[in-house]
Each structure stands twice: as structure tokens, then as C-alpha cells.
Length: 253
Image 1 (cartoon, rainbow, N blue to C red):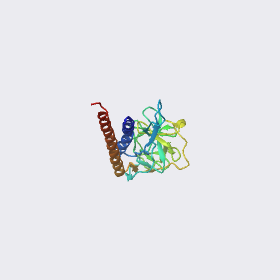
Image 2 (cartoon, rainbow, N blue to C red; image 1 turned 45 degrees about the vertical axis):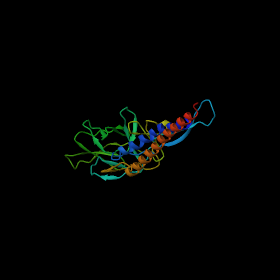
Image 3 (cartoon, rainbow, N blue to C red; image 1 turned 90 degrees about the vertical axis):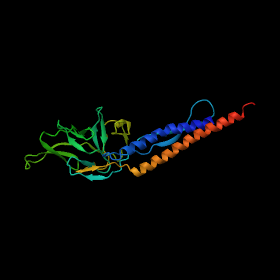
């Protein structure tokens, strides 16, 4: 009975990671550019120690690999609102100074002239942060080139101020960092830039990509998880009841 209770308790404790992922996806249904993760997988883990080699318990192996399936596009008309095509990701500077990637494309020019997204992450260019001269309007082309135009002189040609760090991640699995940004799965490129894939890294200007989380599917997952959790708790309670009954039958009168 102790083995049965131990196995059920381990399943309940390991399921916390699954619950955290489901609730995290549900909380970001309306977040711009949010990408859900592939589901975590449960596997049996052998318990080392004395005794027979039959002691296994369920454990959850979480990799949090990003699913780059596209979300719904919304036309905004803002030249600094961009959505990324195919498996394209944008390089940004995290708060700890490391290079990370995102699909969030609600860009803006700060009072200091640098470009960041609405989450406050500094947008990186191929040569570092991109600076827009004061009093000029910034636009982004489909290949990521950033142009600056004088708003008071429409006849003045636009000047190139930088090129966004766009990378094709079709052949590079990405993990979610603790701050919500993405980093390559390969250890040699962890928290740094990585070689772009064979696809063409491009974007669309004037549109924003929504979350790729399906709220209905996520709710169904949450309901299934709740039923599984209740079943494990009932198993533990029933095991306790059977154990107490067996102990009372073995007592001497």
C-alpha cells in the first residue's frame, strides 16, 4: 500500500508543472506575439536504493520548447507595428544584458531615440541597438531595414538607420527563458545569437500578431488535468482507508 500511495503522491507533485504551463498559456491568450510551448511529457523514473529494481515513480520532464505556429494578425496601420513571417524571430536585449528573441512586434521609439517593444525590451540591430535621430519618423521594410524620414520635409529621401536582427528559427528549437523571452536550445548558442536558418527572415509592417493559444483547447486541457488530479487524490484516500482496515483486522482481540 505504501508503494501505491507513494506513486500517486509523486504523480500529484509532478503534475504541478503541467498545471503551471496550462495556466500560463491561459493567462496569455490576449498577449501580443505570445507563443505556447509544446506539452511537457510524463515518464517513469527508477528509484535508486536498496530493494528490488521495481520501484518507479512518474515524473514530468519539462523542456518548454516554443511552438512558433502563427497567431491571428490584426491590421493596425502603425508603421512600427510588425508581425513576423513563418518562423522569424526578433533579437532583443534582455534586462540582464543577454541576447534573447521574441515574436512581439509592437515597437516604439523611446525619448532617447532607441527602439524597444511595448514590454520594454531593447530591440537589437545587426550592429547593436538602433537609434532614430530626433524629430524623424521611423518605418520598417519587409526585410527588417529601418528607415528614418523627416516629418517636416516630405520630399527629403529616407535614410537607413539600421537593420533589425531577424533570424529564421525553422531549424533551431527555442526555449522559453524565465523572463518570457526565447533562447536557443543548443548550449553553444544559449543566451546569444544563432545562425539563421534556410528560410527567409521577413516581417509585415502595420500588423500585429496575437497569441497562438487556443482558449477552448486550453480550457479542455485544464478540465482534463483537474479530473486527473481528483483521481490521484481519491487513490491516495482510498489507499489510506484500505491500509487502516487491514491494520485493524490484524490487531489481537
